[in-house]
Length: 214
Image (cartoon, rainbow, N blue to C red):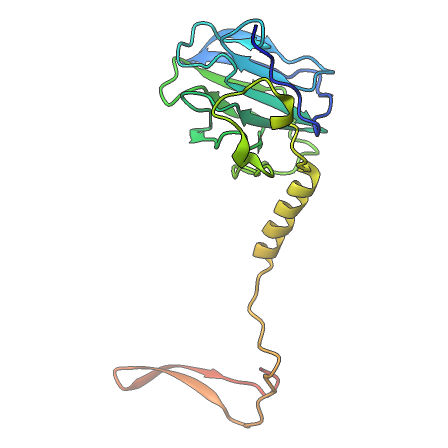
């Protein structure tokens, strides 16, 4: 009998009361899978004895295709080295790399799925903006081509809180990025320094340089 994918060591119990996955074809709701509170992992796949969300009617899905893992108020999705890949809002996820899910995220279990799976019930309040860029797990390179049943493959020493903090810090740095003069620069001493923009032999714009500029 297959071994079920275990909750990673960094997972916490989900606290959201109304989490669910809604399976839709076009605008039609086919079925709804509840994600109850108190769980540390939700496996999506075709094999009923190892999957929490069973998708028998999707022949492209692997037996254990992907897993939703809670961490505090956040939810992460991990592709379990599936055959056809896991997609979130059209973007394919690298295998074994936790990717934060945003409210209303649309999941697909291949590049040509028979239906879409929408995450509902994840509140926006109190959540940082979810990043579409996967957060890499440390030492993921040794993970085998399929889930082998050995929990040690997935209980990496990965700190999602530190990873999220580094991501937020990088975004803030990018937002506030402004060129600074080098340390050897000094104040200008000329009284009437200027840079002229010349076009066709005529000055079209003059930029005066104040003495306080460096």
